[in-house]
Image 1 (cartoon, helix red, strand yellow):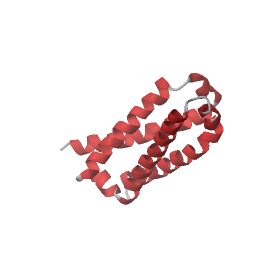
Image 2 (cartoon, helix red, strand yellow):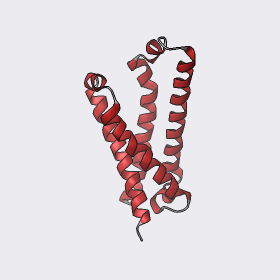
Image 3 (cartoon, helix red, strand yellow):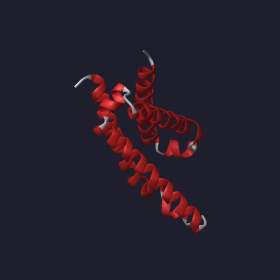
Image 4 (tube, helix red, strand yellow):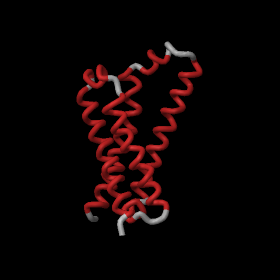
Amino acid sequence: MNLLDFAIYWAAFVLAMIILANFIAPGKLGYARNLEKVEPFFGEVFRVHCGYTVLTMLGMLLACVFYHDGLRDGEGLGFGVSLFMAVFWGSRVVVQVVLYNKEIKQKYPIYNVLFFIAFFYLGALFSFLTIRNLLP
C-alpha cells in the first residue's frame, strides 16, 4: 500500500469519526432543548438535513473504502467524486472558521480544533487528488 492509498483509507476513518460525532453532538449541544423553541416543521427540516448530511458522509466513507483506486487515479466517476468532496470539505473548513459561533468554539476548544483538522485534512486530500488528476 502506498502513501496515497493510506491517505484515502485514513480519510474513511476520519469520516467515520465525524459520523460518530453526529450522534454524540445532539446530546452534548442540547439539540432537543433548542428545537423545542422552533415550530415543529423547522425541527423536522433540521432533523432531515442532519440525516441526509450523515448519509452523504457515509457515502463518502464507502467510496474511500471500496473505490479508493478510482479516487486515487481519477478514473471516471472517481474524479467527479473527488471534486465533489474537495468542494464539500473545503467549504466546510470555511464554515468552521468564519460562520460558527465563537462562544461555542471557545466553550469546546478541543472539539473545534479536532473538527478543523478533520475538515482541513479531507479538503486538502480531495483537493490534491482533484488537481493531481487534472494535470497531464
